Image (cartoon, rainbow, N blue to C red; front, top):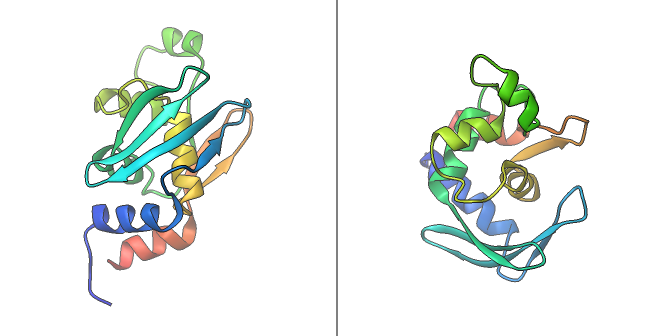
Length: 143
């Protein structure tokens, strides 16, 4: 098999399992609808008001790179925990916010999309944690 870039591997893996019209359920009963999958990433409709949220391939790639050590990482930390921290907390949400790629979307949905695509495992906790699926991590390391 020819070697492919991480972005290509992530994009192809997501496209195999996530399609326009899919509804993803969140842990709290919330949901997002996949409005579209295109060359820029995914278009999502979130919540009862169906607010449009873009999720770029670059953001998914950054999330995968952040998780590439293979260990569990908290998805979010409560805002009060973040306010008490003297340094940036080690959670996916904070990392993605520093990269300015969430565009109103919560890191829980990034983790859920990676889970549905077979890229990540989720531990519902509390706290909710995410890590790369070992088989995907192995495939990523061979490419």
